Amino acid sequence: MTENEIKVLMKKYLNGTITKEEESLLEEFDYKLLSKNHQNVFKNSKHKNSIGQKLAKSINNSKRRNPLLKWAQVAASLTLLMGLNYFIYTNTVEHEVVESYEEVTKSTDWGQKLNLVLADGTEVYLNSGSTIKFPKLFEADKRVVELDGEAFFDVAENPDKPFIIKSGEVETTVLGTSFNVNTYSESNQVAVTVATGKVKVASKEKEIFLMPNEQGVFDKQSKSISKKKIDIAALLHWKDGIIHFEDAELSKVLETLERWYGVTFEVDNENIGDCHLTASYNNERLSAVLESIVYAKKGISYEFLSSKKIQLMGKCTD
Image 1 (tube, rainbow, N blue to C red):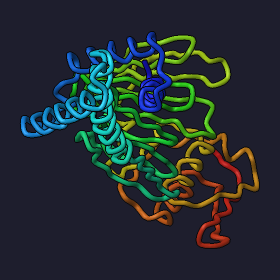
Image 2: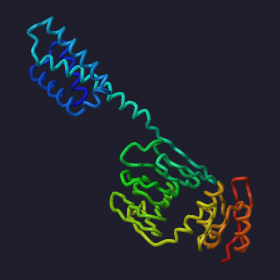
Image 3: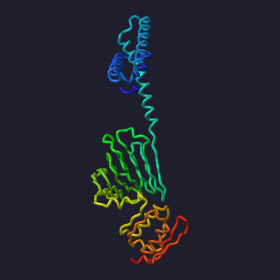
Image 4: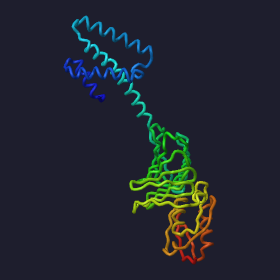
């Protein structure tokens, strides 16, 4: 029986409208309550003795008022008193659990990064333009977080509580490992790359398992998941403040710089995006990065239109 059903029967018992069948149900609940939940009903031995004295007094008073009182009614009064104590106790505990649950949201603007340590000891490195949601305390049987953007996770090991990252249609599940998740909402892909341990990446249609130096890619349009070998060290340079480009199209380079420095680029010649760049920048200022690019790619120049807007001009001669 549910809590509401028990309360209805108790109310009927009090106003004298309870039927024999309902009275039997109440007695059955009394038996189950005492046999399965006696530790919750009685908080301690002192509380148990106090309840016993109240019951004895209640039963004696009832017998004086009505000598013909049936034992079934006495049992029902037991149920009433025990049931009320049980529900008050459990409702208080449940209320405290609900109150203690708190969801935390952390976000980074373009050009910002953030390091977090979750309640279970999991370390999270949040890249620019990203948002993560997680509970203040992991009280359920799963540790679930939501991510939009890019983050590196070093998950605290706990075999009894899988760690799950929800990224739109994709769920990444681990017990204790380290990996990178790239799931920017404007991208048509979700990429999960494993540094240590083993990771499961799953959508509604398919699931795959990834080992170290493997990357799983979910295509949002085709709903397919593929995996490939990858150099995890190069992929994780961002975590240490390093931007690394390996034969990257200049259009992709500009997208990365926009996220990294919180700026926007205007290009007067779309063919500029067809250039390719291989370079690494270790915590460099944006102006130094741009000077390096125009030096390596002759025919390109740039101009700051404002502190957050840059125009790229010319033609790339790769």
